[in-house]
Image (cartoon, rainbow, N blue to C red; front, side):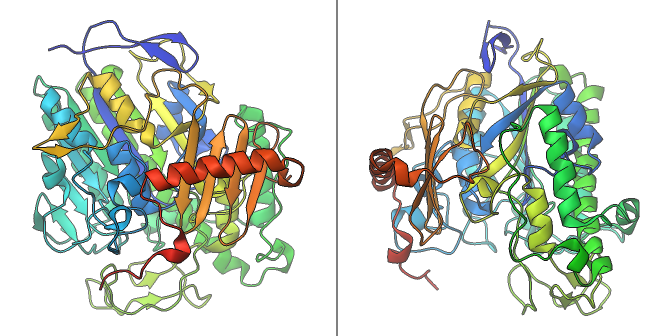
Length: 527
């Protein structure tokens, strides 16, 4: 086999003499903020991810697309989401960029690596197919050999809907079923089986954690009890101090103010309930970290860890969505497996965590998740699009253990990185269908002074070098020097009119060429 190993030549850059090709493991957290891992300044206990960071590289300026479906489309294909047909969510509209389904003008990382001899497996959340009940554009139809996970976007962790093994809908198994553990256990089994074969393998592990509902095992919650009695303000200050000390955040960047919708902790009602919300959220992340450790141990036991490229990231910033009462729908069950009614909504009368609850952690804690940045999931200010990225690969990152890189990267770069590491070819055509040219650049090489772009629900941005032009729909453009002010507190648009005009034109050119339609002009989703 023409496997390859990379050696470092410069910060952020690797080259490849021909040797063994690596295995590739791509892990994705769901609705987790930039500041929610121990190695990114959090108090949440994530020893397994911290270990990967300590022997790998942390990226401080890696970006997602601000929302679940678009991120998955971009991660899987190396394209901007509108090019892959997922310009918004999986609610289809009669426009090329908004089909709500991965189109056939793109290939997934599995479809690209499989012809190069890679075994391909996936566990977790798919969320890029408009039909969540019948296979047609599910993982096995998009290049994966094996699959276990949910097709839709959210679910009860103790009794998942749209839970699928390969192409067959299945149910939760066993009295102690918990989705996060089930995904990592299956992923570890896939790895163990694949490691017995000579061909390298690709694993895509897309956790649902810590996406709402707030569901965690009681033993995990108990380990977090009392940890958040200091409240949101003190938590944000502590995380920020650690981030500066770790070299992740420039001390020139002022910590953003607490969200105006959130009272000071001294004035906050229902403090015990508020603490419980964050305790469950933290427990969800700690369970996910436990699952990461399970996969890593399997790689170690198989003798494959040193030559496995592991990438861990998040799909958007912390989620400030407040949940109310819900009716039955594609992601919601009215009753638990043992027949109890599910109590939905963020109510102080309902302590979240159990299978009979359906809640989220709310604005204040999301504000802490995104320390030190502005805004949340949905928006393309830094709080919505900044993702942790841990890259671990002992044979390819020799000499960079525990390193930090400040070079910007984007989800479109993951496909390019997989191609670079594997030696696989990105096709121009598949079965007579033209494939959209790749947008990303390998994270294993310098990426240069390129522009990066975003659009989601009318929220728009372009970043070129140190300059970021950003708009919160339907407001106008703001301009920030993210080198000096990445927390986006000092809008420079008033004194840089020419730059705003030029960058806005640059954004419009990008948008028109990539199937982006102004949010206010989009037709309603098809029924």
